[in-house]
Length: 151
Image 1 (cartoon, rainbow, N blue to C red):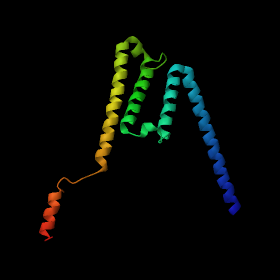
Image 2: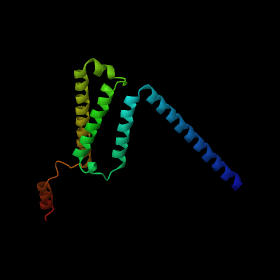
Image 3: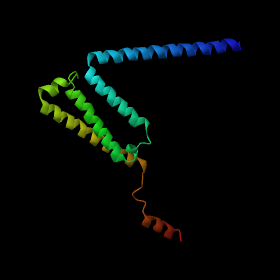
Image 4: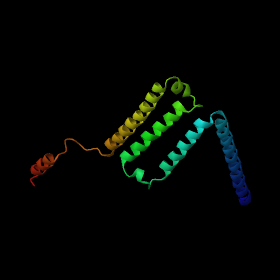
């Protein structure tokens, strides 16, 4: 009975490996199809995703030393992404940037500024959630409590 259970686990592992291999192959085909459709745009996106993975998986780097550095990273990332989106020749939104470069440039600046503001607000929100101090608890209130207790 023990041997059949072990074979069952081997079969599950083999099936999982085949499903994983099939999924990776499908992902590779989608990746190649995207590069065939829009090589310039997807080259920019892959470069940005590589940079993003380096940023996320390398916590010891100096860019993580201060929130302001991280905010700059996200702002620059948004500017580069929106630049690729509005100005790469084969991008879905390239006609907007080609039709009106001023509108495309304004859109890039707006995207960068929106990311800057959003990241700062998220950081402020996180800071406000970390510590909850009671407003009515002051040093004088504590002294009054001690005085009432006779100390």
